[in-house]
Image (cartoon, rainbow, N blue to C red):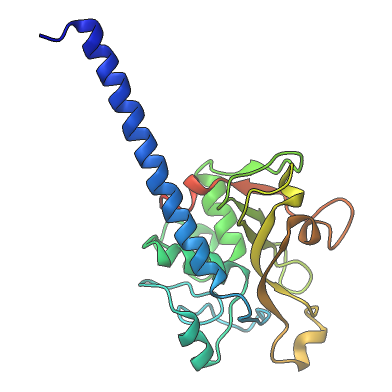
Length: 226
């Protein structure tokens, strides 16, 4: 008959085993959604204009249902903006898009679901954001974000960490949908950028030495739960 001490050891071992298995399953899920995001590399970016509505099946992909494939995007000549990429990642995992549930209607979440400002408010209100620390290495799947300011000069931005290389986040690689032509110049162009990967520091310092992104959200707080 097992004694209390051995039974306690057994329970601790079981809890540790369950936690390990859960962590492994979560990591596989993160790896799978990152692989999906990478399949979208090369999809064009097109600026959001003030007159544009937020669509469930183009640009922002702020809808309900499974994520679209790369082939479907190419065949329909559609595009992805920065939060469009993370909205598709959420849909790939069967998660919801911020603003569609009516919880952020006080800041027009129903009108602008899945946009940078709504994403920032959703994560901030849930206490899931923390200030970025460029001296720290972050786990794969971490979301980096800057809040929306205005349509023409700073629409905010998001990107996702996709590896764990280097000594800190500056040397880690990210995937994001980004502009290569500024808002004003792009008015006469169909495409203004693309979905691609790069070292984080290339994106962080693109505008100034002070750095661009302000906050991060760890993968368990946006990829593994609503």
